[in-house]
Amino acid sequence: MNYARCLSTMALHFKCNPLELADEQILDYLHHLTKQSKSSSLSYCKHTLYGLRFAYKVEGMKPRLITLPSLKLPKNFQLY
Image 1: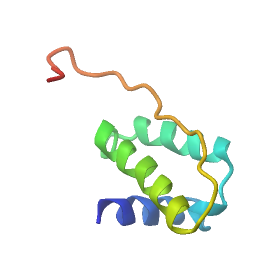
Image 2 (image 1 turned 120 degrees about the vertical axis):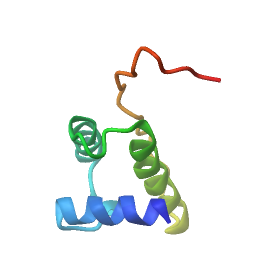
Image 3 (image 1 turned 30 degrees about the horizontal axis):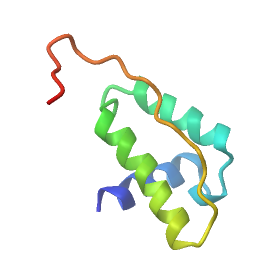
Image 4 (image 1 turned 90 degrees about the vertical axis):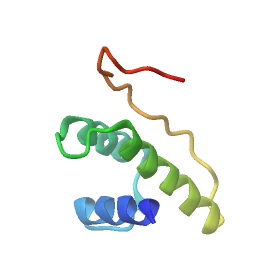
């Protein structure tokens, strides 16, 4: 469900199907997300990117090499 919500937000932002976007537009959008206070979480960016990857697979499209932008993590953040 998160994938669909992230892709619909992306579609509203660009006013087009996210599958029609160029790699540069997608990267710019992911960087844009990191600048917004309400959705600057790493998980939101991941859901957006993974949603795109899933949509490419479902539509039979060739996978693209799009990576997550680096985010500044809080100092008390711990990886397990």
